[in-house]
Amino acid sequence: ERQLEDYAATCAAVQNVLLSLHSEQLGSKWATGPVIRTKAFRDVVQLRNDELVVGLIMVGVPTRIPRSSRKRRGLDGDVLRDI
Image (cartoon, rainbow, N blue to C red; front, side):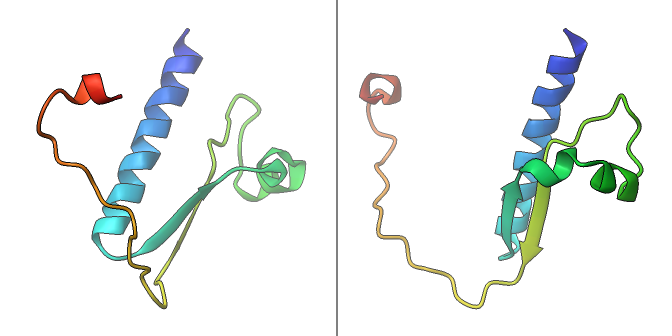
């Protein structure tokens, strides 16, 4: 179904935008919620009846960047076996 393919492609594009923002040291959040389904929101962004909103991307400059406490594993060995 074309609508499902378009939705999946849009989600992949959003993830790419988030990764790009991160590479520029910008904080971001992809959010959904009931607001994107309200008539008021749809009117503000001028959506047609056949259009959907996948989510909102919030972007900002972080005041601090937390240190990651998680250690990453190397890619040695069979990655799929470890899953």
